[in-house]
Image (tube, rainbow, N blue to C red; front, side):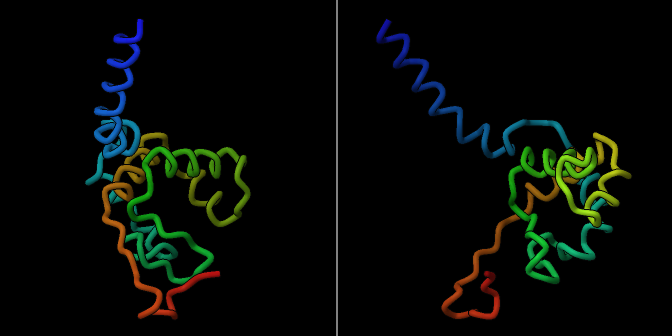
Length: 123
């Protein structure tokens, strides 16, 4: 029993990075289609999802696809309350949501040295 358990733990540990690299689920959304659909998002979240125009808008670049998809589904259903996001999310199909999530998850995260750029710091 112990060798089987150890083997399962090892297999899980080895496969987890590949699973996480795909945002938790492989093949749900199309990155290119998501890029094409992201124009409305850019007004608040920035052209690349990493430069929000205001600190109240989160950065989307590099976020997990599953998290983004869940958030959009919750805005669409009303489980998350935000009138601006609800207005956008209600127009999205499930495929649109998956495509947008895949696109933003595929973007690199830009780290900022706050000691050198204190104006970027958020509360």
